[in-house]
Amino acid sequence: MVVIDDFIKNSRVLTKVNYDPFFYQAGKHWWNGWWNTPASSLRHEVINHIFNENPPVAIQAISGFLHEANIIKSDAPLQMEVPKDCILRTIYYSDPETDNSKGGQLQLGSSENYELINPKYNRLVIFDPSQGCDVQPVVEGVQKVLVIDLLETYPNTVPDLLF
Image 1 (cartoon, rainbow, N blue to C red):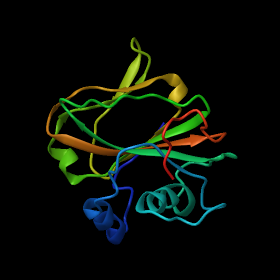
Image 2: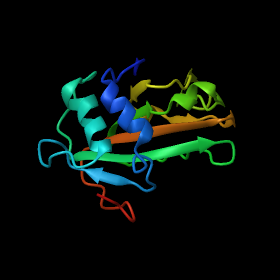
Image 3: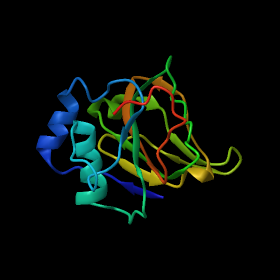
Image 4: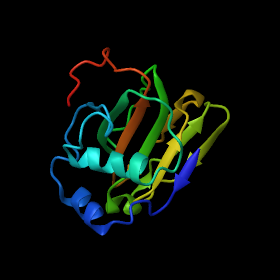
């Protein structure tokens, strides 16, 4: 597991993430990476920033990135479904209001033996999802996160996949 606070240093990118109305567009999206297709969205730019420009971990041969922005609140918990070919999962806390929320800790490990990671604005968490992961309920406020899965193969089993 890797946890990095204040990950994105580029204020231009942070400002764009905070004000882009399409960044939190619903649905699962696929990008087959900078080595195949130039970035065509702000999410692609963020993924490129994380894994190409400032890689905190070495990545193996992957087909691409399954990514989904989520707005987590008390009446809308995050469901942590993990694709079967996912080799790494990344959670990026992308909204400054996250720091004003309560609850919503990332739970890594089994239900009996786990570690809690507190949500924090501009925090990047990378982990092996095969160990188990969940998000505890948000009690107060809202958390916005970008979930990025690094997949070995194209996810042809994901319905309504967007590009």
